[in-house]
Length: 341
Ligand SMILES: Cc1cc2nc3c(=O)[nH]c(=O)nc-3n(C[C@H](O)[C@H](O)[C@H](O)COP(=O)(O)O)c2cc1C
Image (cartoon, rainbow, N blue to C red; front, side, top):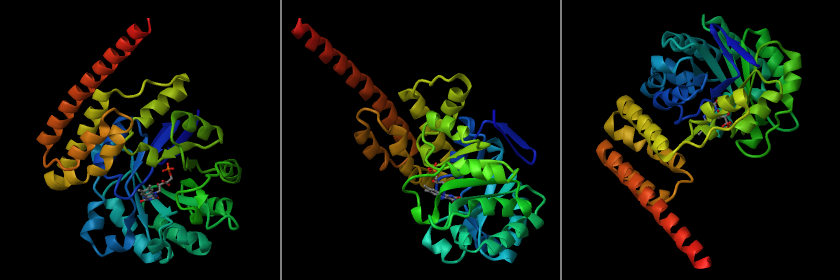
């Protein structure tokens, strides 16, 4: 069994929710936590925004008590800004602070933040050190294998961040030039594990309980899931069950899916108010309804529904539609079998 220890947080076979901009806000993190995510992360927060007291950045610091353990992720390229924003993040009382050294987006890397730091390891070292030196909280780093295939530096990065006091390293097993596409290279995990003693968290294309098991077989101390949790937060519970028993749980039923989607929606409304709570859940409906019969119709109605009541009513009607649809399918099958006799 793999153990991940970060400060006071200790988890066995830890399956973590990856930081994702515009996705891992408190309403979604809370749902993932309830369904088995062992640690959740905020989306990345700009250190420059935090020190300017920008409302958008400050808002992202908010955490719910019942989503812990939670990490606040910050990014930036200036040591002073990162040091100050570490203190600001600490005052929001997360369980630890994570530094983003892996974001591939142009706007971020051109400022030498995120994965931009993979081209300048001395700068990355200084950034990590300045955060470690300016907070009492444990500090972790999330990065990639390197800038491109010709410059894989992950083992050096691991040694370096351990040396300046980071207590865990999450590795998205791609290079910056791959973005989110192309093959992931989990095989680097074993090499990095040999080089350092801090825990190593594997990330990248972990999509199913089988993938989680294979990911642990690399020697990783924990596994981090991003996209596969969007609209499918059951993946944490399903993966834990599979690791423990070797058996796959049944897929969530239609009722369970609707119940969790509504829980997410209510959290969203509670957190953002009616208007934005409903608007910003739109991007999740596709995931919650994926693979279900007649899903296209209901989705089209849900994305224009103005309030919670309309959404609840539509989903209840959808349950009836699916029941009728299944009944029709059964009758059709029976008729067909009779005709064959
Ligand atoms: C919509 C989206 C937003 C993301 N935002 C962040 C972020 O804020 N911080 C970060 O470290 N990584 C971010 N990532 C990268 C993920 O954390 C993760 O490394 C990547 O998606 C690979 O994992 P996956 O294959 O499990 O999705 C984001 C990815 C996506 C798809």
